[in-house]
Length: 103
Image 1 (spheres, rainbow, N blue to C red):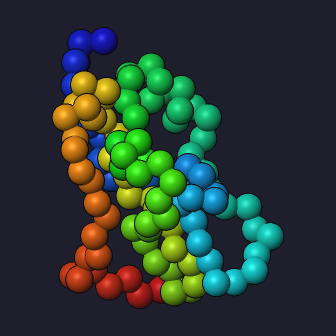
Image 2: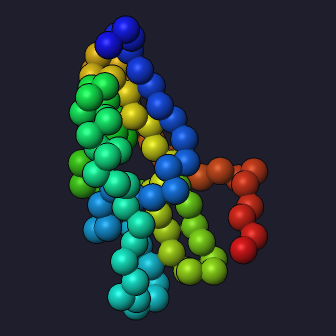
């Protein structure tokens, strides 16, 4: 690999763990969209990790509320190389007062 440090930030439009990254007030048997196996193979190949989850292994916080589905999801993520991640002491998900999602 030509790069030592990688940081990928964005809306992945999927979750990793249905128990930790998703919450709904509705009962549903619908299967939640999770990141594909190929994504995890890529993160392994480029040696990145979900930095927020590494620091908060059991915490339930979410980045998106869907009023249509009455659910919360953590789909916005930061994946960093191990070297960069070791420098992160604290990472939080904060409420965005400027973003209103109308569905």
